[in-house]
Length: 186
Image 1 (cartoon, helix red, strand yellow):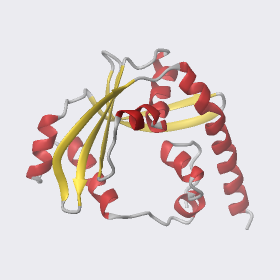
Image 2 (tube, rainbow, N blue to C red):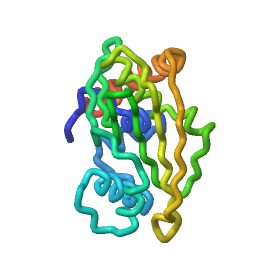
Image 3 (tube, rainbow, N blue to C red):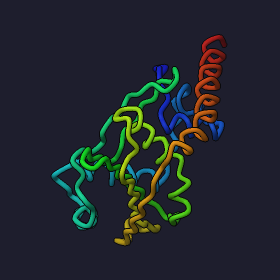
């Protein structure tokens, strides 16, 4: 077990779902066919050698950001945060996020997605500017894998979104520290 000295979006999500100890302290991985396909797709997006023709065709349909899996480490009011954007461009400041899955994404869901707010926060804390563009690309899957359908959504984030996120992020950070301390004192 390796205790992490930062909070990531996946840790934040695990805390909010009550799964933090199980995943991060006991090492129990949540696996399903959808997660595996998402991982395969993410790895293919980073690679120049794609063995899956279907993924290769989908990759051709998507923009090529300057940076893939761009890591950010920031500190927000004493909360160390780490994250990796699927795609990132500095000019203009643009976030690219890829989602695979059966569950449909729509504009309302994208506009409310905390993960995108989390990622926009990296840009704000690093560049002191809001991202000019935030894109989410939903690559639809079914029981057989990728369907070939891609939907593109553009959204924005504001300081108001960060203000709403802060108390939830602070609560998660404090809660995770408590879980770790309790776990270590067992």
